[in-house]
Amino acid sequence: MRGTHRMSNRWDAVVVGAGPAGSATALQLARAGARVLLLDRARFPRDKPCSEYLSPESTRVLERLGQNVLGAVAAASPARLTGMKVVAPSGAAVVGRFETFSYALPRTRFDAILRAAAEAAGAEVREGVKVEELIYERGAVAGVVARDTYRARVVVGADGLRSVVARRLGPVYALGPKRVAFAAHVADVPDVHKLGEMHVGRPGYVGLGPIGKGVTTVALVLPLAEARRGKRFFEELNRFPGVAGRFDATRIVRQVLATGPFARWSRRAVAAGGGALLVGDAADFFDPFTGQGIYSALRGAELATAAILTTLATGASLQPYARARRHEFTGKWLLERMIGIAVGWPALIERVVGRMIRRPELADLLVRATGNCVPARAALSPRVLAGLVL
Ligand SMILES: Cc1cc2nc3c(=O)[nH]c(=O)nc-3n(C[C@H](O)[C@H](O)[C@H](O)COP(=O)(O)OP(=O)(O)OC[C@H]3O[C@@H](n4cnc5c(N)ncnc54)[C@H](O)[C@@H]3O)c2cc1C
Image (cartoon, rainbow, N blue to C red; front, side):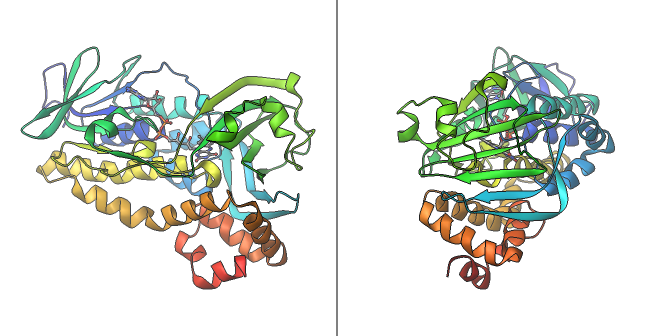
């Protein structure tokens, strides 16, 4: 705890990556009195290819992170989304409604708020520091190597999709289907309301929605092989019937950012010999269609914090964190993967959208389950699955 480590580069916890997972973990550890160093290779505000929608249940986690955090998000003029519209390749569309609403705002803003809150809680933040290696002592992770060496009782790998920490801890599995994404911000897009929109095409999909101040975020997700054909971004958008003609390339206000291929899964959320754990995309990322990544990062940070504080106080193993993740996320993982695979089958999406048009309560249920407002298992019952496809 704070004050127990006096040497300058010895910490209770070194957190690698100041995205939502890392900043939320650092904030909570520092608030509990731990001596925390938060490192990021980037300088903030930094951008991130994302559709920038915080699923409704994320609001609850932000509230628990502190009224200052939620207040700063609410004050950043975010859009408020009331549901999701899913559009099939034919143009058939259905809207599922949240019971509440979700915030959507640029990642430059959102991530900077969390990073600042971690610092205000007492974490020491260093930017422009790229972690390259882990240090081990008696088989356990004991720190990280960047320009300098930073020793810690616990290392938190929150360094995203291409996590160095995850790769050093053991194999990282790439799961199919291999997709890549291109994301941009465009102003004055017509017919953008208080909804996220997911347009499934042949092949790939487009996610779009308002992020406040008249700006729309738009992400094009394609199978890797299609992306290699190298068509232009706005040309590709026009392939989708519900998107065609809505985007004016001259109104782009942030350039196109690319990322992928995604669908990665680190087998070990906790280092075999102890001393390190993974949180956020570093631990697991499948596909952005359901927009659960930020919630998983924030909720994962809560689970990680609980385990780390116990370890710091008692020397107990970090393994309960791996169990807590399985307990918390297994249903979500299953639902997310089923949907992520289904969007590669346009005929199946056509069928599911057709069923949801006839039974709007199923659309609400699915959208609420992916928004983490109801447990994922509610959408995975045989009765619901049969209603969606038969
Ligand atoms: C196209 C697309 C759309 C998406 N849309 C949504 C959405 O609408 N809603 C949603 O909830 N999720 C969405 N996601 C997922 C979401 O972006 C991620 O799940 C989320 O950013 C994970 O947060 P994180 O903190 O784990 O990682 P990140 O946000 O990626 O942060 C990782 C940090 O680690 C730093 N870092 C990396 N390597 C090192 C290193 N070696 N040393 C030091 N620092 C390092 C990086 O600079 C970065 O700041 C989308 C993803 C994609 C690809």
